[in-house]
Image 1: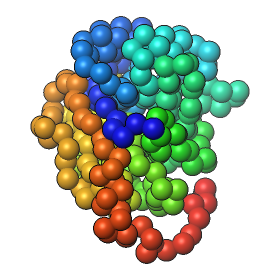
Image 2 (image 1 turned 180 degrees about the horizontal axis):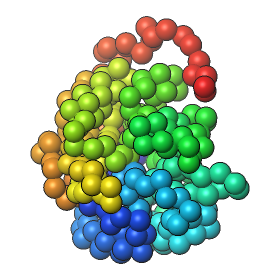
Image 3 (image 1 turned 90 degrees about the vertical axis):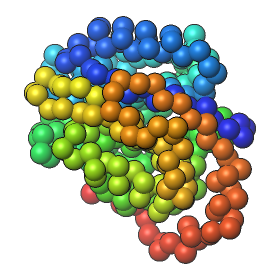
Image 4 (image 1 turned 120 degrees about the vertical axis):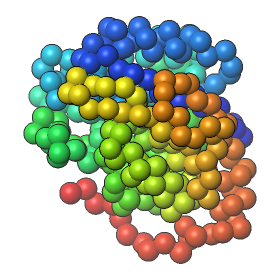
Length: 262
């Protein structure tokens, strides 16, 4: 078990519906990381931008991006995470992938589909709560719009890290800031949010604000917010979580109810 977890958040512009270009750009950025990290996190739909044009850009679980993630994770001896558009059977998913250095793939399918963009008309919602165990840390993955729904993030499993990848637009970034902090406080966990920057193919603007909050809602990044392309680094501390939870056992007072998918 790792007492600490070193994490790199890559906040980047995304080329619209261009997986080849996006993989090349992210590989270049990843290759500039000259410090030891355990986990690299990329934004939501990091190969395409937030598009509903799944016919042209969806990949399989044996596609180029999966192979690319496995190769880079092995080369960098760390895990790499982010979401892409996946066709699985007859369904399309906004799928969060967590790829370890040994090639192991863990996945979470976005549960709350963004109705304003008609995401629910194109994608199938995931209904499974996923907890990823990595180097002794329990990580709960979520994708973008999931952030607005606290029950789906509820810490009934004692996870250590709540992790969001997103394409969260600039006009509503105040909600992103507030809700990430709230999810950390109410779940007594670290909360990480990785967002993109730049304009997408529909003209929507994104201004980042990728963030990491501790169990008391304090930012643990040196600079916050950041509104340009950047690689942000942080170190999470397991003993800190344990000390605060022991001193402030708020999770023990929570109502007992189960997450039931809609």
